[in-house]
Image 1 (cartoon, rainbow, N blue to C red):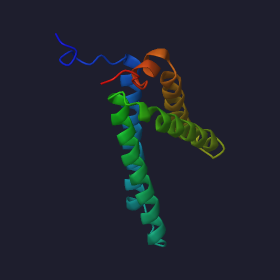
Image 2: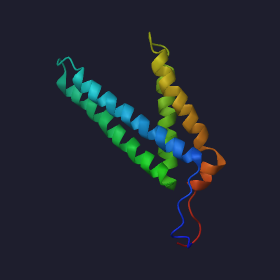
Image 3: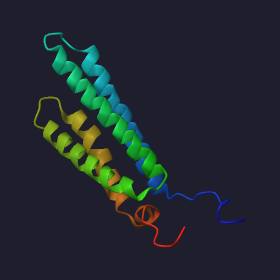
Image 4: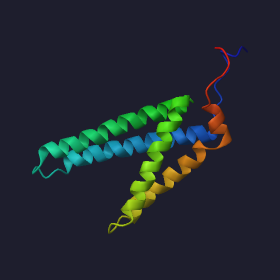
Length: 133
């Protein structure tokens, strides 16, 4: 078999990172829908602005998930940034009443993905190619 017809071998950690990022994108899209559905109507512009921000974040996170699955070098940086922000949001949620479940749902996947993004197989899979293509 030639190199161009070999099936792509992705490290398991890379696939896990891509799947978790895709699930996070779906969750953020759920927040967008919830912002619109649960709106009280007193400040419609703010509601749509928040929903739009969540929708854009979900779309960008979905792009990062696809880039990660395809082992694109550019996908690691936004993946790390998102996970750090998500972890801080989860930690901040611990201060609120009843925020423990949300905090766990935000912090645990963020830590798992951060650890996986820095493992050798994932780093090597997403490293820039130095050879000529």
